[in-house]
Image: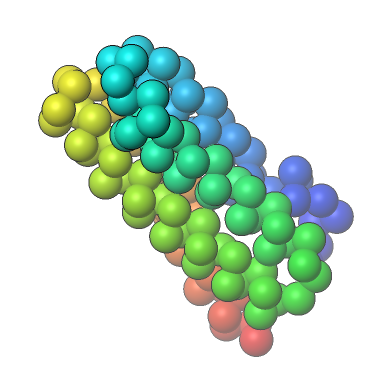
Length: 118
């Protein structure tokens, strides 16, 4: 891997931006959701850059691909949760949705490219 740190990866950087946006969005959800949807959304969002970082740090392409897949799974969870929050609480998810789509596309491309190199 050409990068020396996971922090150099644009997908990780966007994942951090996404997580911050999800925290901003969930801060306005009703108090009774603090241990429900709000908590779940925050965990899913934070899981994305966390898995990218852990996979990168593992050092092998095989491990990195697996952790990128886990991050992509967390992104799918978050997508579902954002849609629920939008439908139930009329949460404005435009910015988070845009960042999420960008991250999902990057993850898909990275996984495909790393698989081709193997």
